[in-house]
Length: 282
Image (tube, rainbow, N blue to C red; front, side, top):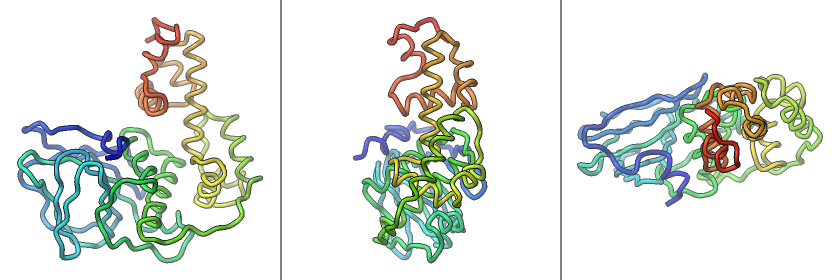
């Protein structure tokens, strides 16, 4: 099992706990955390891609005329307009996190052309699923322009990999992505819109995201987040309260900073401050 995937949700299910919790979405993108026991979903269909990870229990569903089983850590991929159901495979119930993305966003992230088709709906985790795990792990985080682009690109990369479609080669515009990286580093605490980065790079946001990832191994949104965390750490080390450090670094609030801090460093800001000798911060 892949720890970053199985760690997205509960390790077990309370017998009385059933819920659907929606995450912070954006135009064309929805996220949800679902826990069910007993009855599942009746046959239905979406007009979006539905890409998720089982986080606990055993999930079973019928899709394209066959019954499928999805275990904790495994990824399921459902194409738009395909009838499917879903329910628990055992009395203990099941849980999953899922991302719904409109096909036009996936097509834009791929640079146009036909959408890739993934025939097999259940897959083990691997390198191609890392981007999906990152997006699903941020269920409660604000989904701004750059994060929305990142989410669509993560699904596009996953679909391309699982369909066996090779990623097109081509020259990386290093000058363009370097300008964007410099801007993000200098303005990390600001809410720079994707349109501004498009202007700086001279290319559309999805092409920019692909070039940026190939050049630096991460996305513009993730790069900016790490610069924000560096700003927050510097303020915390200087004695700033955590709430002020979060606001000054550009996070939505202290909780947002804490989630990103844990995902980056494995510690809460408060614990990091104590271990680094900056105790007493709140």
